[in-house]
Image (cartoon, rainbow, N blue to C red):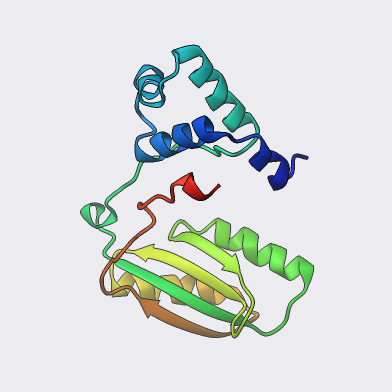
Length: 164
């Protein structure tokens, strides 16, 4: 398996420019992208394929305005577990991965064990989510929920690889 260090050594400034342009607009044509990075189409296409095959580019997706499709509530849930065991952590991870409402989830260090970001329609949807889905994780000892009041910078703001 290729390490991060090996991947970083193989990323040059042109790759960084390609990545930045794809983060801005992954739907643009390779021809347009090639013009922006001042290369011909074939080398840009080859570089993109290399970035995909090494896993640096994991995929392409659309950025949605979630409020326009009825999801008006973003909640961060800090969850403390009663105990940890590798198989339980794996079960929890698999269960949470199957929840459509969850857009991000992490096992973390510190005062709690698990951080979950969920996108929901409203408070009724939140209540249903907690009572009927999150409550199925029977080793939860505590959940603290934090509701987003106003977006300052959301996940659609991309991190450009200037610091690679």
